Amino acid sequence: MGVAAMDTVARWVFFINLSLLLLHEMDAVRRGEWRMFPFLKTLPEERAYRLFTLLHLPLYTLLLWLLGEGAPVPGMAAVDLFLVAHAVLHRCCERHPGYGFRSRFSRSIIYAMAGLALLHLALGIAPESVDLFWKVRFKGIAV
Image (tube, rainbow, N blue to C red; front, side, top):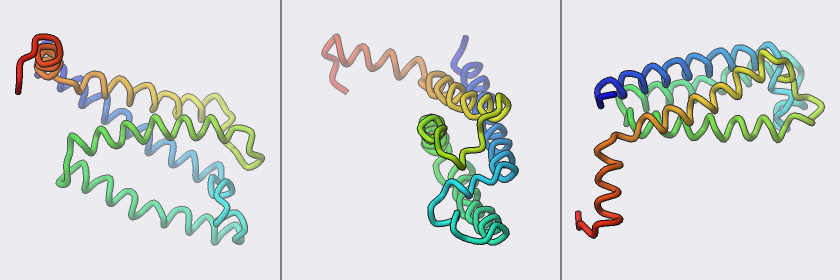
């Protein structure tokens, strides 16, 4: 597969994953994820829901800026790393009494995001970069 084709596949993988993240956030609202956060779980239900939802505004704004105008490639890598860490965090929280992502549907979204993030990171490494790494590392070529 050529570099251009691999880049196209990598972008599709990333945008599918970004869509899964939005699905997960919809699922998080449905499942009352704010009950997991110490600073929100003590608030009245409606207030916690509103604050949880509003806190996503700066997160989405930063995400869209980073991917659009900020630094698209490092931004994509940052999202990928976040999604892997996010899955680990979800795994660690499964025993929490307020954890609401026990359904196969919810877990499929969470762990698919981590898998696709790893795939995107793997696809995002240009063959030329890998080739240059091996030349520098094992043949003593200085850059």
